[in-house]
Length: 445
Ligand SMILES: [Fe+2]
Image (cartoon, rainbow, N blue to C red; front, side):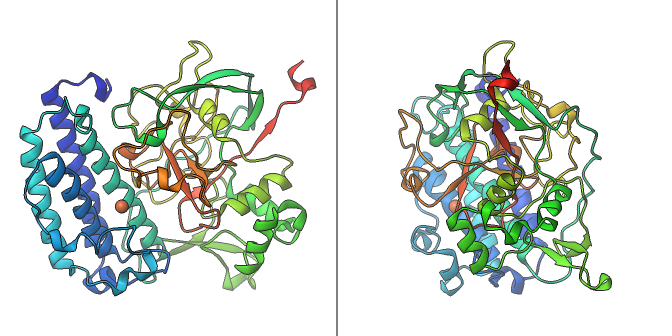
């Protein structure tokens, strides 16, 4: 059963549940700290948490109250403050933001109207509302900001306030990499109702034969790169990467800290305020694109291209079709992937055998966003919808693609077609990577 099969009333129920789940998460992330923590900027890279909260409400008001519902504005006067394009994150603390109490009241008032609009709005006819798209867009927007707020929590100093059970244990993999034979596959989608404009339209892409790692690169493997002097060997780095490695004095993934009790020889990690040993078999996280690329070069490999990643995730050789998710069209469950902040870290390699793709590749969805050797561009026939600022204004910018979602990504904001992008220097996001390589003629014979 997928959303496309739902009748109108079932779709309304589904939308309401998704809105509520997103809001429960936003409330949990903002109620976890006091008002002082909500208004403080924990890093120049991030907004104050209370900005994110009211911005969530403001986007919801703009699209669902004013546009879909054609209602009077709730707070016309604050549109500018919460326009992400008007104010870079570093400048947001200086804005006359709503206080925590005002922000909470505002998002509640907006949501109350939205539930009323959802009850009566036709979910067909106009493209913006067909299959509940505008509601789905707002659900995804809130969940994306929740992941951003989770990253702010990771940057926040102080006692731990977030808690979750550990991820399931890992299992041995059959092989370290898999061969994906040459041939075409269908990339992108025309049919996923809540897919965003940059995932469309679907189109056939030929991909040469390649090998791709069965799992993301682990902490243990990454530590070997470090121990081999990878950070000090220019051969593995691009020119921009080498310059940034020195400018930012990169020596290890972000949030790795040297252990004081071993003379500084052992690494620990700071995970949401808990300093702990680094699990060797978990995917490495909090590395930037340049570090991922350097590791891949050191390993004699490279990062996957975007078609390579998506083909490994979606293509089913038995039927020739592309799936919504690695395991099939079914929405993600806890058995498939480490999504939705159920755990506060990536899961060890092999932890999700039910989530394996038809090509035999594990953990493509969930755990860590995966850096790709790809810039952000629209697919052939791209059309901006419903606004240029969602994707199009970022095309051709200084961005690298990220795929698959992390442990902090909600299932509602994650599909095997979902495309994320960020600056190649970013390390506070929950990003890791896996490697790929060309298949040689001898290996194909
Ligand atoms: Fe936003």
